[in-house]
Image (cartoon, rainbow, N blue to C red; front, side, top):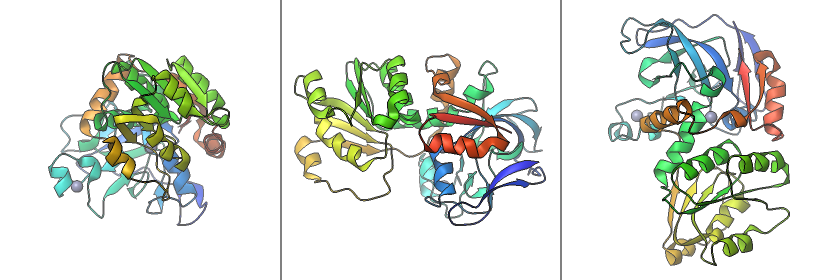
Length: 343
Ligand SMILES: [Zn+2]
Ligand SMILES: [Zn+2]
């Protein structure tokens, strides 16, 4: 089978390869991948900018069908539609045992499509049954492939709760921003504001279509006085930083109200110059969010299945696996919000 692989450390080194379909262990599922999304992480791995262990088949946002179940597998059978998180948590480290499986500290942790476990940019992949989630048949494969980013967005709102009546500002209209926007509205936010840059033009338009009350291009307008005006000078109740831009991360602290909450979702990859006195003086609640918990998946799948949350507007292109280069380029240029590859 054809697979898309990171073959070695360094910039590039992503190649189309021919590989035998995996042989599953007794506790694994053999999944025929139906759709797989390109994630920022895949771009980071292409450019050697984040953690990965080569050689590894890329791709960790997927949906597929079980074509074989290992002899010890109890909860799944052939024909089930499934998805899963990327992280195969160890289950026995301190953080796994206290329920924070997303922060597992096993140094040899396997991560689908990233480290020691081949991913979804392939016709078949092996998935440990313990991390898999069954999907209702009514979710199309393309939409189901977005369950992972939806679960990540859900986890961000598990870390930073939105209350009914809140004014919520979302910095960055990428997949995370557009999903958190919808989740904030579901949680009862009465006003939502999404900011982006000029290159986000189409994404901001979609934010508006998904219910954002205000969209702001920060290269044209300073968002701080606008948000001050909307909130009668108080500032926003909740700010989610989803862009990973240092300027936005800094801006979050100027947008939030006193005793407000900031959810940091994007990574900047660098240090930013900010006085933490702002947290002290504002009595702010600042929280990071990383990956997903079991609960995040349960709610994510429910919301997609019941059509309470829309993922279709986020799918900009569906390409064959052979067209991966085009897909990566569409994601990199921000022309696309989410590109799916079909193996
Ligand atoms: Zn991802
Ligand atoms: Zn662990």
